[in-house]
Length: 77
Image 1: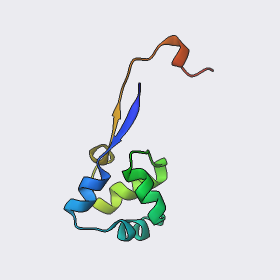
Image 2: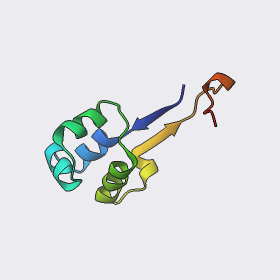
Image 3: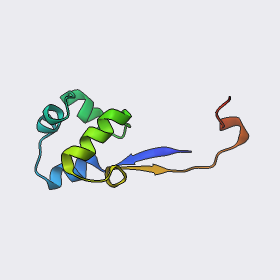
Image 4: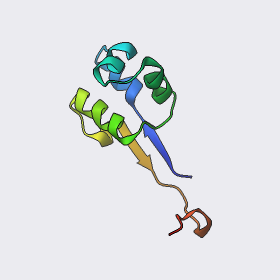
């Protein structure tokens, strides 16, 4: 199974930034930051804003974990 692993909560805590401060700085909502920190993936634009805010590469905050892909799971064209 493919998934996105995020390290947002740890990075935010290390920088001593509240969820509300991060939400305000990235033009998102507190609810969205909580949702992301609970293991959900943000949209690309928000992921880029978050990486920019922390001056970190996107891959340092959000990691793609490949899983087994069968022919049934491949995108259809």
